[in-house]
Length: 503
Image (cartoon, rainbow, N blue to C red):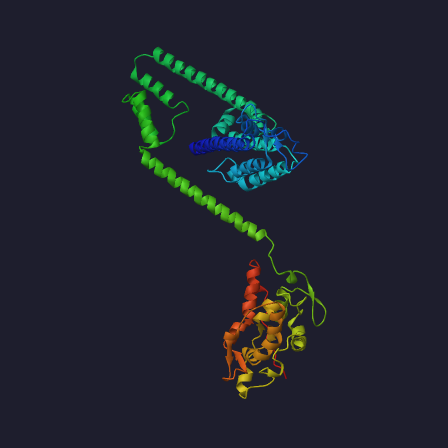
C-alpha cells in the first residue's frame, strides 16, 4: 500500500512538471507570435495607452504580473517592451484555462477537477475584464498546490509511522502536520529532522544491543548449552512466541544443532512460510480484490442510506391536504380516494386543483355528479352510452376513459372520451372543429390525411384508420406521471374508481 501511495505521488509530481514545461513552451510561442506580428521592424510593439484605459489597446504585462507572464516576456528580445496585444492576451488567458481544464494526463487536482477548473475560469474572467491582475490566478494556484502537497505529506504512510514512533514529541509533531499556517519548506525540514533523530536513536540502540550480546558471548565459556541460550535470547528478545514452528526452532538452538544464522533462516522460512514471490503476489492481489469489494459495498450502502434520507419527490399537488369535494373536511391526497381524470388533468396543467374525498362514503355520494359536471364524454350525443349501437349487451361494458392525445399534448385542451368507440364516432367533427383550427393558429403544417379512413369513394365522411394512435389512455398517462416522479410509488397512492353509468 505504501509503494502504491509513493508511486502515485511520484506520477502526479512528474505530471505536474510536464504540465509546467508544456505551459512554458506555449507561453513562449504566444509571446513570440505577438512580438513578430507587431514588431517586425525591430521596434517596440506600442507605447499606447494602458489597457485599463482602453479595452482595445495593448495589454501591459505589468498590469497582470505572474511567473508565466515573466516567462513569456523573457522570450522576447531585449529591445521589445513587455506588451501583449489584446487578441494575443486573450489567447494567452485561454491557453492558461485549457492547460488546467484539459490536461494530457491526470494531474494533482484530479479529485476536485470540476471545482478547481471552475474557479480558474472565474479568476481568468476577472483578469480578462481587468478586474484583477494575472498574479491573482498564479497566487491562487500556488496556494492550492501548497495545500495539496501538505495533504500528501500528512497522509504519507512513512510520515504517519514516524509520528506514531514518537513519545513526548508526538502531539507537537501532529500539530505541525495539520497546521496550515506553517510554510511547507519549514514542515519538510521538521519531518526530515525528526526522521534523522529517530534513525540515529534507533542506530544507537541497535549498536548497544549488539555490543551487549557480543560482550556476553565473549564472557561465556565454550559450553554449547550456555551459548545456545544466548542465541535464543538474541533471536527472540521479547520472549519465545507460543507457536509450534517457533518452539521447534528454540529446541534446535538449545540442543546446539543450529547456530544463530541457521536459526534465523529457519525462523523466517518456517514462521513466515516458504512462499515464493508469485504466491505472495497472488495473496496480495486476493486481499486487494476483497478490499475493493468491501469499498464498493460500503459505497452502495451509503448511497442507499442517502436515498432513504432524501424526501420522496411526489407531485406538488399531492403534498398538501386538500378539502373533501363533498363535506369540505381536510383530506390527505396521498391516502384518500381521488378522481384519476382530475389528477391527470392537473399533472398536464389542464386544471388547477384535483378532486379528493375524505372517505369512500363521500366519494360515492358525489362521484356521479362530479363526472357529469367535469368529465362528460366529448362525443356528446354520439357517445355510445347515450346512443347505443343497437346491441344492448355492448353498452354494458365498463367505460375506459381516454384523452385525445393531440388535444392534451399539443393544445392543452382536456378532451375526454369514455371509450374508443366514442372517440371514433366523434373523430371527424372533433378534428374539423378543434384540431384543424388549432393547427392553423399554431402554424402547424402537419398533414394527417394519410391516417384517415373514408366511408365512400367521394371522401366526404371519414374516421381514423387506427383510433388508438389518437388516444391517450389513463394507464399510459399515469405511467408518464410516474416517470416524472421516479421516487414516488404510484401504487401506494392510486385508488381504483368505478365509473358509473349515465342514466
